[in-house]
Length: 241
Image (tube, rainbow, N blue to C red; front, side, top):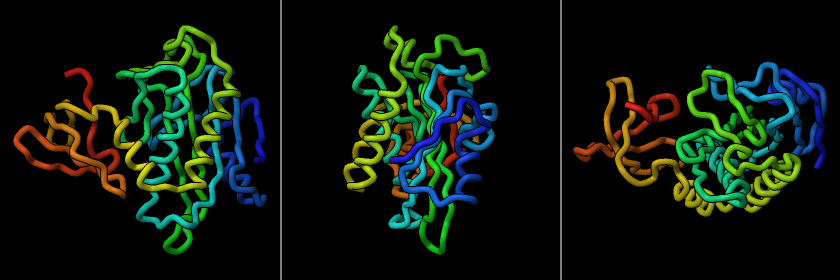
């Protein structure tokens, strides 16, 4: 496995995309940094991270064996890999659909996967990961951040955690046991059991989780038994009503 470290950069995903235009990089190549000046989460979101405290990195994959309509399996795979790593510290972690990592009702990590296509197949996937490790204080207007340091009351070795995450990603990716990945993802979903408040373009409603389709579609069942289906950004989790 080859890797590159930059003390500071705009965004590891962005730089890795630029590198791919000029170089042939091996699958599993990792670009990591201590600080991103233009760190980003999902479209429209930014990512706060104190310099030298957290994990910020991108992994290059060539998932050409995965059909375009099955690409959500990569989000599930990476989410499960991170969860396996964090579960070695304590219980209480979960995956908030589609691919945020939570501890209780607080966000400890996020994933941004950017795919390029070739015909009906995926060509390259750049998997950007941000994990809050040793940050003690968050100053942005993000509603609910938390770090592993805050959870465990101990500073953690970032390089060890990085290696564990990568090992888990590579193991799941090499085996590509789709049923195992999907089952583990579903079993560890945030708000997996019970009715909670959500918001869609019609307003607030209460529902329970009814399942996740292979393309990433979230299905919710309202108290009246209605099944509602949503793709990313079409529904919001409401924590305080």
